[in-house]
Length: 99
Image 1: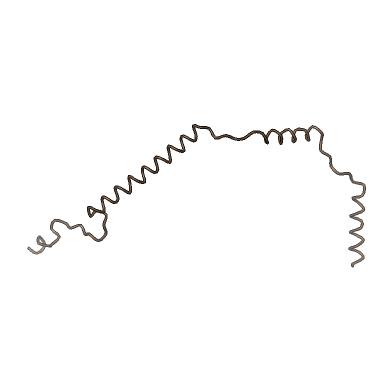
Image 2: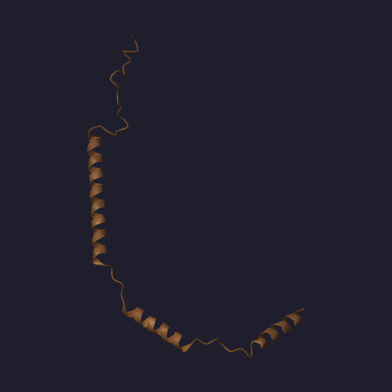
């Protein structure tokens, strides 16, 4: 069995003896080199308008966060949104029910 495998491997290797490597067309080589050289010198820039929009959005988000925190702190000082305080109904003592 080992000799059969070796024979098969030798046949496969011999079949590649007459093959020639694939060659790239000359114009394709020139196009690739031109693109590589072009990309080396062009830097992508972010437009100033986009930077302004991002800065404005960031300022707006910071402003909203501070506004929410300020309102949240002031409502907690007044006793609102505090789970420990119970909201009492006007007749919560049960005086109407005990008539």
